[in-house]
Length: 296
Image (cartoon, rainbow, N blue to C red):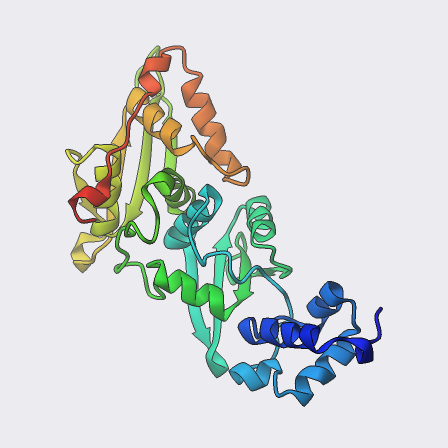
């Protein structure tokens, strides 16, 4: 490790600037990056009133993460994970104004891969449900960025389809794939009559506004949306898409730029569908419409 007493004023200002911009970065982070002992760096922050508590009123978090991951949706990976958070994630403000984001899912390997993509050092936690694991991230920046991207705290009945300045058109297929992996389904059902081909269906769930955006993008505005729990008169609907060729063409579009860490069990179903002898290459061609042209 280097001797901090020999640290230049320029480098000291650089360290302070980075801490002010990312208050939850730990002393260990600065030790690894600048090669000064964490204890000395921490004392330096105390002297300059630049501790996490000084800057935010909160204690320093225990685990690091890429706070800026959702600052801008400019890759298919980011668009995909935004879709996952829209459909299956949560945002919460807990005691002492602590902002957290997280996912509760049963696919542990998928959750581990998502954590790696976010450069999260946090472990997976147990939940009240036996088959679910939780990725929980403390990050003011990530929470605020997800809010700006349209992912709300109490989002079940409130989510809208994202705007062009939130998810550019070129990344919409990956965003919608994230929605599918988070809270959608792909079904390959046993045929009702012997000798028939399997019945293929895919389903999205969400608010009417969110599903209408998907319909416009996929060119299937003729399909009906079905209200879930209609007796409650809530804004939660299902979009069902049936037919081997139609489902195959839609999935091919969604998986065109799929991240390597997308949900394997659903991708396996997609590969099984397109390997059907009835599917020809021309059946897989689907040109998406721009939902933003109509004000979405």
